[in-house]
Amino acid sequence: MRTRQRIAAAAAALLACAMTVGLAGCNGQPPVLATSSSSSETPDLSVAQERSIRHRILGGITKANKAKSTEGLDRYMSGPALAIRSSEITIAKSTGSLDAKTTIPSGAVQTVIPTESGWPRSVFTITTTTADQQSKRLLVMRQDSARSNYRLWAVARLFQGAELPKFEIASLGSTQGTDTDSGLVATPAQAVARYADVLEKGSSSTYAAQFSDDYFRQDLATLSSTVEEGMERNDGTQSQSFTPVTDQIAVMRSTDGGDLVVARIDSTWIRKAGSGRQSLPASDAEKVLFGNGTATSTMAVSYVNVIALYIPHAGTGEKITAVGAERQPVKVEAR
Image (cartoon, rainbow, N blue to C red; front, side, top):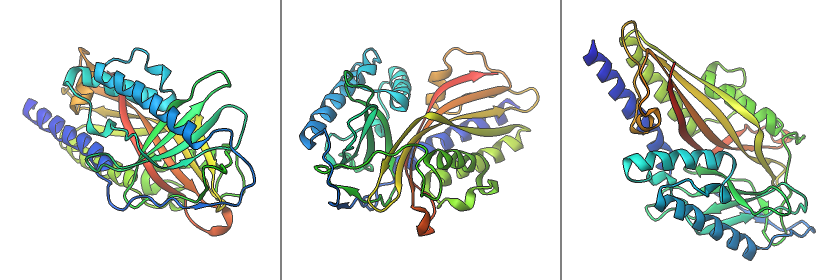
């Protein structure tokens, strides 16, 4: 009985790791990010200022990474980015090093600067690939008020071949959207909520047909299916639930009438072992986050997911497409 339990846990560990590798390995064709120059508005932030802000932020994050300490990290990060990096650093304290997926290149290939002068306001930046040819990152840097500094609010690793919409060149600036933007196949708030439903229910979701297939969904489906097989052999069950965080969303309007949306979706993975068995951490990261907890038959793992979606204009007939994602466990507990 204990042998079967260990085998099931080991299989789950490999699959949990595979989920991370699958996202990090999407390195094929770079995302397409075109530009146009039809706007007459001028952004308050220059390209040089964006570069200075980005380097300041990444410099602070690098120091935290090297020290393996989250002290002062909130000066440089906020929102889902802070929650994810805090977890990654906590894990690195135990494992000795940060996962390769945590790398954020300092170079940029495209910057999307808003024309809005109010707050909060966000800058979207597409980085170069990493030195080891991991995929480009989509960064969202946000300034909450006139007297606050920009902080890195979200990071999403872009998928292989992801095609992003067109934006105004940085010197002209683009328009920030809101979660209620109309004229799209769905408002940003609706799209995020529906995507969360698709993540949870798969093809049985009412909204599944509204989304193009993507790497994140594929990896989650493979993980869920394989772990389910292992759990069933040991009379156990597993389930995942996904909940959009409604006040953590950033939107930028493109020149082709669609919106690029970056949002946080929290999820919980609950695994229940069969009668007389214990549910154990399924990866090194989970082991660190579980710490000295006492195992029971049920284990709950909380994740922070960052999703980047492109929502097309209603008149195009196109589907909503996920172009990038990030996923990180942040808490592990027995129930």
